[in-house]
Amino acid sequence: MFLVEARRIFIVVIGAVLNAIALNFFLIGANVYASGFTGIAQLLSSIFTDVLNIPGISTGLILLVLNIPVAILGWLKVGRGFTIYSFISVVFTTFFLEIFPILHLSNDIMLNAVFGGVIGGVGVGITLKWGASTGGSDIIAMVLSRLKDKPIGGYLMLINGVIIVLAGVINEPENALYTLLALYVTTRVIDTIHTRHEKITAMIVTKKADELQEAIHSTMVRGITLLPAKGAYSKVDKNMMILVITRYELYDLERIIKEVDPNAFTNIIQTAGVFGMFRRND
Image 1 (spheres, rainbow, N blue to C red):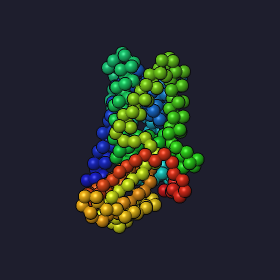
Image 2: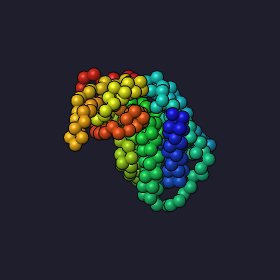
Image 3: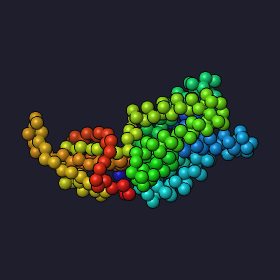
Image 4: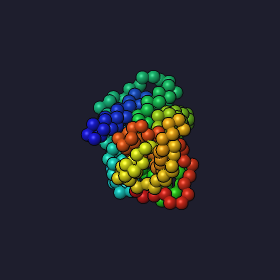
């Protein structure tokens, strides 16, 4: 268990390194903005430095301050494990943003937008894949989604839309366009590594349905449907377990399946919507 958690923290730290590299080596120097709270922190840093002439207020420091109240909200409304690892990601991102210099590797703003988007997308993607996030926008979107029962994508799009508009207002209009490009590239990379769907359905074919059900319910509160199943080739009787989870629970579900029944067959599919009883406040 210790090795699993240590590896999880290690991956989160690697994600923080990649996010810091994307920002300090590509995006910040080109005045291209990242998504979510990271982009908001960039904007506020630009306003303090360029508009208000107040130097020394860095993106990393603002990012940390913004995430403190959000971490408290996540602790109460989203889940302690997810929030802890997300805040660890924010702390390390802030740390690396402070120690890495801001470089201008290229004067081509498009190259900065694309490479920054790709590297940042990898950082966010591996962090999500291992059961955390890289900032407060995901947590806020999750809470709003549960209150309104609407997809989190709309809230994230609204946050990023504000960032794009302000990027054009504070700098040049083309900065808004290149910010849009960077956000698109980041999203596509995240889609490849993880998933941006809020709810997903897991169909698990296993011989150890009782043990697996007990292990899942000890970690998350989700309804599970059991169906009888039989292997077409082996003719062995099995069970199919069907449950709907959020994308933030995918890491824990994968870990549980590997521990209880490594031979289980699992199919993960996108869930467009859920009607009826689906727990939203765990």
